[in-house]
Length: 180
Image (cartoon, rainbow, N blue to C red):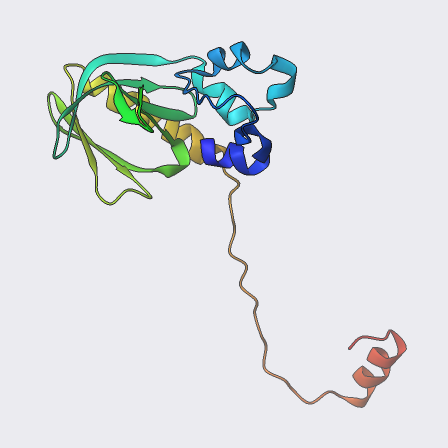
C-alpha cells in the first residue's frame, strides 16, 4: 500500500535537509505530519480503521510463531504483529492487510485453529485463537458481502443457423430494407 502511495505521490521521499523516515501504525497519525486536506488517501485505505472487530492475543503459525492482533473490518482483514520488527533500522509494527477480494478460503481446523488462504500468498496462513469461530464467521461475512457487491456476468451464446438458399422475393425484401 505504501508503494502504491509513493507511485502516486513520488515527492514524499525526496529528502531535502530532513532525512528522517517515520513509520506510522495508523492513518490517524498521518495528520501529525501531513495536513488532512493534503493527504488524498484512497477510500479503501481510510475505511481500514472503521467498524473493526478486534481479536487480541492470536498466534500466527509459521516457521517463527508470532503473536498478532486480528482486525476484521467491513472490507478487509488486518493482521498486526504484537511485537515490533526492525525495518530500515527502525522498530515498527507490521500490519498485513488482506482485502475481501484476496481471500480465497477460510477454514476452521478445530476449536481454536483456523487457516486463511490468500490469493497472492504462497500457502495458507494458520492462526490459533480461543474465539476462532467468531473470526471465521466475520471473515466469511466480509467475503460474502464482497461477492454480492460484484456484478453478475451472464454468458451470451450466439446461435448460428445453417445457411439456406434465399427465394427471389426474400432477396428483394432484403435489398429494399438494406438487410445484410
